[in-house]
Length: 342
Image (tube, rainbow, N blue to C red; front, side, top):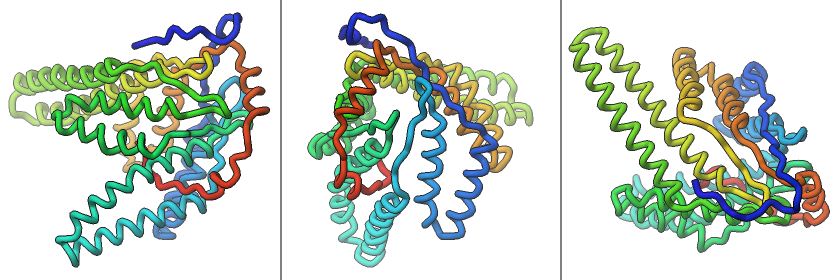
């Protein structure tokens, strides 16, 4: 992983400040089941409130240096964004059904406005998040959004997937070069090789795991035991591929993010994440989804227990941001969450 040579602010030795997740599966289950029932009874309208309650629970149980994060969004703002999205989808469906020749042009139009929606959604979620009373921010521009939402993913497709890690790299640059905490902008020192490593890990796990699974299945022959093994093996392989991708991508992103000399670090491993996600997957399937709240809490606890900040003087930095932060006013009041992002 590439590392920046930028020194830590000041002469003090950096301190390690770890994230902690304090949530409980049973507690989140009560929130989740109420969200689910009310969303069904209101035909999805309550889902905006459900999203806010869920994010406030996970933000409010994420602790850093003794203080927890806040999610400040209004459910009404989220509902407005979803209404716009549903209307656009309804118009596209109507045109596709009754005026099929026009559907292609409408699809192109929707793709052309998609980067704007993505940019606004990222900005909304940033400014609605805070820690120690200081909001985060996102200053990405519309031109940059067009590049990372349309241009670079298209490049990944036309190169038969070989260019996709470079698209991930450009998306990561767009995100973390424009995020800010208070008035201080973040930066990333990630390079394309960090994201190509993600692709190589996924390919390696897929090929080696697939060959081993096929070899064992061949030796077992066509029996009930072989079929059971094949089914369990493919589930485990899928989870292992997910763990390989997620842990590698997480490392590529968070081992390279810094803000004024303080840097994020993670030591998530493929095996560690696999050991969390595999039982989560099995128990969620066996309980027809009812285990999901415990699975979400277990995953959040693992991810955050392996994430920390190396900072010289975190308290002074936060105090300075609190003093400098301007009121965001109209931008927050007019913001919608379209529920989409990179």
